[in-house]
Image 1: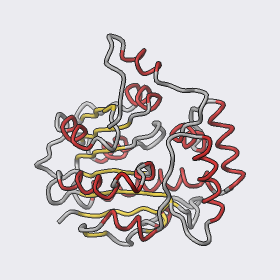
Image 2: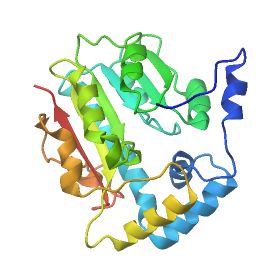
Image 3: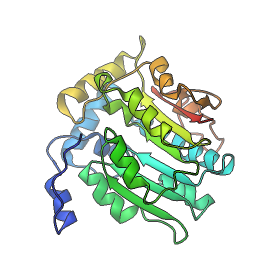
Length: 275
């Protein structure tokens, strides 16, 4: 379970008290690569990681474009109007609710993260259209029951929901039963719900990626657990995996309007439907 400080009369002060500006944090480094806000320690670590693996900055862009394409498909083709986005990360352009509410202003989105910087930005920037609704939960992916209980205040779990797990399961170690966490979340959702998941991969020809992850685990928080493409695909067991399957995020239904997107990144993603 994640231990968060007790609530105070000043939620902003409580969040500020949890921010560690000295140690690099993955959400802020990711945002640095996307051109957003960060602290000096995040920039230094982000530059060092990019030295070890020069293509790493492309992952952030590929993941963001994957999010937009997946949400767009779920809205237009599957009729999804509810999203549970766990591991939100720092707000940037085309966040889940922005993509969804452009297509359906009444869409409802619950964002979940336990990083205080993310939460402070989310409450200020991730605001809903008048017709829809957004909410922000201070929770950890490990706290499945608490997430579901709180999200039920905004989402109707009798209707299909898209569970968004972009770049977050990598922070769950193999000894913590990551597959069980994802399965428990999907088990709580009705037929017609979807899982959208992305995950950094490892493999025999990805020594630069492995070296960058080793550097991160020595200097930053939280620690990362890499997995092979086959291990990432296991998160979709029992679901109807949409074409083209679990592939490089840049190859999941790319659009001609994304000409600068790299053809291949060591960040794989997929979308699965619950029957």
